[in-house]
Length: 189
Image (cartoon, rainbow, N blue to C red; front, side, top):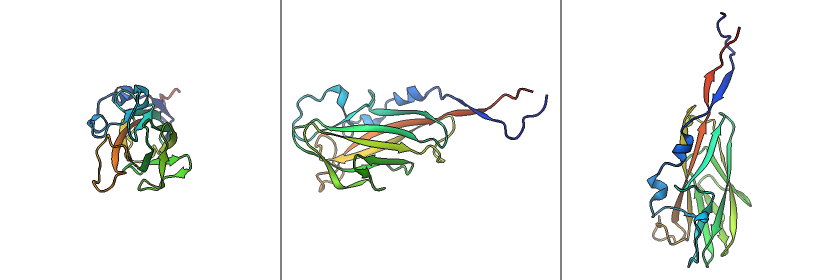
């Protein structure tokens, strides 16, 4: 049998635990002080501005699935105002430089500040587009990783980060993505 040539191909092998990881509980997003309101849970009649997010699973996570290194993970998120007063979103931020956020009317600056702020009338929604670069060193082949997206608004239900800023109520969303595991192809002579 001849040895493998140095240019042997690689084949993806799925990460078996990513679905369980995306369903695992995480205090960062389940703590009432920061937990998002799930649109699918039904908001009912909410007094004041009220942020709800569509597409979250039962543990407030968006599963982005498995991807090949270098292939970006893309996801859209719908942000809704389910309250009876205008909702103002002042900042959408992730500490990971691998995540790029854009909204209906363009990109969001790297620090996450929205200029002008996004104002949603009662019953209105906005689409947020996420792109996660899967080529950074933080992503290890065959493993899943959780990232957090922070949304700051005037929704009084969550903790206010800055007591002097009425638009600093924070909601945390968890994103889970993984890289396919790679194994050396079997050489057939």
